[in-house]
Image 1: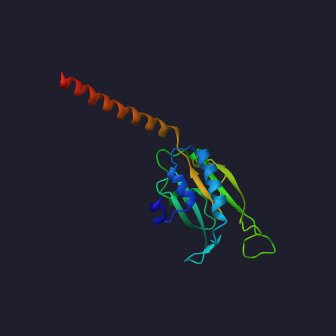
Image 2: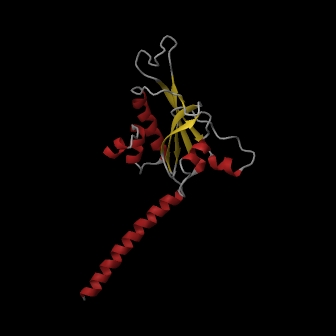
Image 3: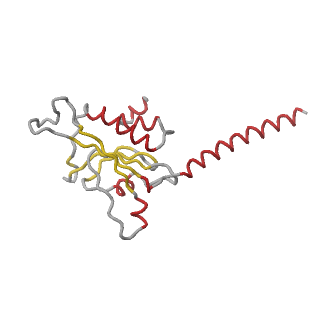
Length: 188
C-alpha cells in the first residue's frame, strides 16, 4: 500500500491494483463504490485551466492498457484519445467491452461551495458500455464518447489471457513433475 501512496494513486485505483483477479463487472462496481466514499472528501476542481489556456479535466484509465493511471487531458477528449495517451491497449485487451464509470455531481442552487447539506458532491454513478472495436473496424460507426471530469475508463481482459494463465500453470506443474521424475531416475 505504501508504494501507491508514493505514486499518488487514488483510493479507487489502489483497490483495483490490489484486486486484479476479480472479473471486470465486479471491478467496475467496486470502483463505483470506491468513488462514492472518495468523492465527498475531495475538493478538486472539475475543470483546470491548462498551460495552453485550454480547459483540462482529470480522468482515469485502468485495465489492459500499457500505462494505466490518472491523466490530465484537454476537455473534449474522447475515449480513443485517452487510450492512445495511455500507451494503447495490451495484447490481452477486449476493446469491445470497455466501460466508462461516470461520476455525476449535484451542486445545490443555494450553495456555491459545491457541498450540499450532507457534505456530498456526488449524486450517483452511471456505467456506460463502449464498443471501441466496432468504431475501429466500421467506417460508419458513431464517434467515440467524449470524456467528462472524473470519468474512469476500464479496458477488460479478453478470453485469451485466461487461457494463457491456465497454460502457464500447466507448464509450471509439468516442469515440477519432470524434475521429480528426473530425481527418481537419478536416485535408482
